[in-house]
Image 1 (cartoon, helix red, strand yellow):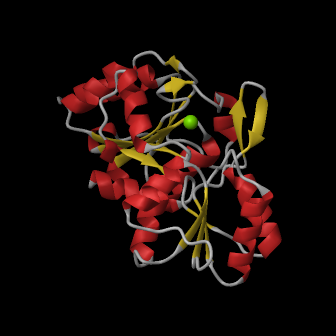
Image 2: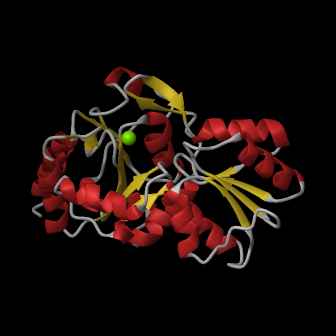
Length: 270
Ligand SMILES: [Mg+2]
C-alpha cells in the first residue's frame, strides 16, 4: 500500500526519533511544519511518555522550532485523563502511581486522589515508586477498583541500555492482582481516538508518523490510519520489511517524507 498524500488533512506525530533524537535536533523539521501549515494540514504531537507535563513538551517543541500549543500535545497522561473523564464521573476517587504529567492531567479534569476510597487505580511510569505504592494499588484492585495504565511500554532506551518502562510496572500489578489493565497509549486505540477528536479528521485522512513498529505503526494501523515510518529512530528498514505491521511508507527522515509529500501535491497541481 502507498500513501495517498493529496487525501491527507491531518498528522499524528510521534516525537522522539521523529522530530529529535535525545537532545539532538533532526534535520528538516521546521521546514516540514512550515509546509504543513502552508497546506492547512492540522497536527498533534503524541507520546507514550506520561511523566512530563504538556507545558514542558510545548517548551521543548518550540525550542526545536516546531510551532505547538498545549491542545496539540497528546501525552499518554492527557489521553488517559480524557478517557477517564468520559467513562467515570468527576467525583470518582482515584489512586495514582505516576509523576507530574499524569497527576496534572487528572487534576485538570477535576479528579481527586483518595487512596482510602479509590474506585480507580491509574498507573503511569514513576521513577520514585516504592513497595508501599504497589501494595496500596494491589489491595484496591483486589477490592474491586478498576485498573488503568497510561501506556504499556515494557522498556525504554537510556544511554546505558534498556530499562523498565510502565509496562513493567503494570506487569508487576497484573501478577499481584490477576487483573489485566486497560491501557491507553499506543498501540492501543485510546490515544489515537482522542488525537483524531482533537484534529477533527477521519482515520483515512490522517497520517501516523513514527519510528517504532510495535507502537506507532501497529497503533496507526489498528485505528485505520495510513502510516509512515521514519528511519531516524528505533526501527530499521530490514525490520520494517518483515514486520507484522508493515508501514505504508518508509522514509530515511522527515525531510525525505516532506519531499515525497510535496511532489505528490505538485502532481495534482496543489
Ligand atoms: Mg519514537
